[in-house]
Image 1: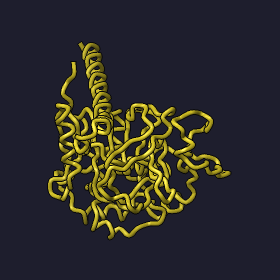
Image 2: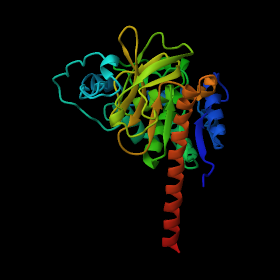
Image 3: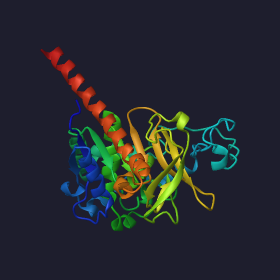
Image 4: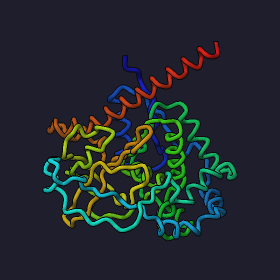
Length: 341
């Protein structure tokens, strides 16, 4: 019997959320689950105090050189065997670019980003950062799943090759970014199913050591069609074995270098032949999904049942995984209680 889940949703009551986060909440409601709001304003952090703590991080100066030396790059988005009949992939993808003559350097999550390693390893040494971490961890202990919705652009300070002045963060939202990083870290630790949408997809990539880049002409609210790739290697069937997808896509940034333990599962090929990664998933461990597009707009496709169902199915698949996580936790609790009795 299906149980009502408690889904954590990053929620900002005091800023302009736009229309995407409320639509995600509506999607959770459509499946009769409960929302646990995770709101950075409840922590009570002063951004100036937070920036003063970040200024003391000793590894900020070395981040640029570490990323310049990183040899892990986006894996080929072309089927390995181009003779395979994978939905006429030759018509979709250009010839593959020859691989660089360098070894593939895989790194754990943030090993390519010493700044993030330091953040997680030394958070208890900083009053404000530890408040953010403790808030995130406490909230997630009561969740069966977590969704990171869209939002403003992610600060280059957390992933870029060249360092960025901390004062630039005053005009952005570093409290939210650090909160998201601790949320992802906790989800990985607990095995809690995680879905990142738009910005949420991007911050997952940053957490795993990837980087972002700016992209033009991707910030219109239209229904972009993009190809599905590497289905044969995908762990999660969120596209139901289809080779194309239509979805709303609105973003100024996109994935550049793919983070470790992540696989791209869809992309769009623009008129200028540039590829934009549209979704990612974790290679191992618990369910971690990222969609650069917005499946929460599925009700906008009322006149097209096929597109409506393909977008809605992503939530259906995700909630089924959350249900499995809940059952697993209940079984573990039952076993533990038996041992104690």
